[in-house]
Amino acid sequence: MTVPMRNGMLVILSAPSGTGKSTICRKLLARRAELRCSVSATTRRPRPGEREGKHYFFLDAAEFKRRIARGEFLEWALVHDHYYGTPRRFIESAVGGGADVLLAIDVQGAAAIRRKRGDSVLIFVVPPSLRTLRRRIAARRAPDDDVAKRLADSRQELEAAKSYDYLVVNDDLDRAVREIDCIITAERLRVERQRLEELIAV
Ligand code: 5GP
Image 1: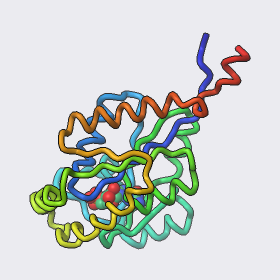
Image 2: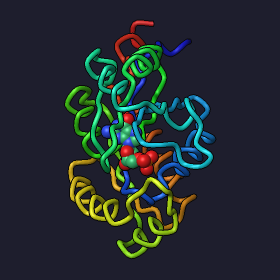
Image 3: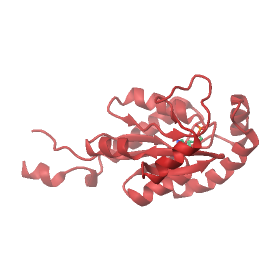
Image 4: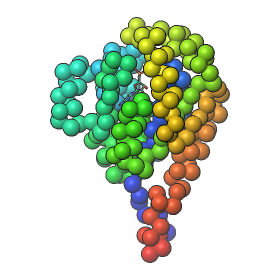
């Protein structure tokens, strides 16, 4: 008996800058071959090692605004003084094709997607303490990053975590990844995400 195809779900991961979100995403994608990852567009400059189309689509502000006007983003936001946006077409075709999609986006983007797609799963990842966060942000020292600004923004982001579905503490990276993996598995198994009616009819 084949299980009927269902729509994919959106798994949104937000975390203050320096919480280890990109590493978590990489490890999750390695664990779950079927999980797709949304690549955002941004107007910030690439950090060393970041590649066009893999980490981000790097655009200038004029091109970003043209794409906003054309409705090419499912959501977009100004984060730490740069524009970031989720390309709509990729999400719609992946989810329509039954794939679950991971989005590493900020709290404004998460709220916008929740309004549009109420069944999205919102996971907030926090560092064990603000002191750890300060250390991690300072250690990154990327040329385009304003450490003080990122730290101040982080406090506001932590406040927004209250409206998320899950809170994961990243004090042990592997455990945090396992916990998020479990959340995805459980969310996939929710009755309303499965086509029970079609199963019964088979
Ligand atoms: P970073 O510059 O450190 O890569 O990202 C800065 C912040 O922007 C992070 O919180 C990241 O999750 C968020 N971000 C990345 N892509 C998007 C996006 O497409 N939309 C929104 N709203 N935020 C994003």
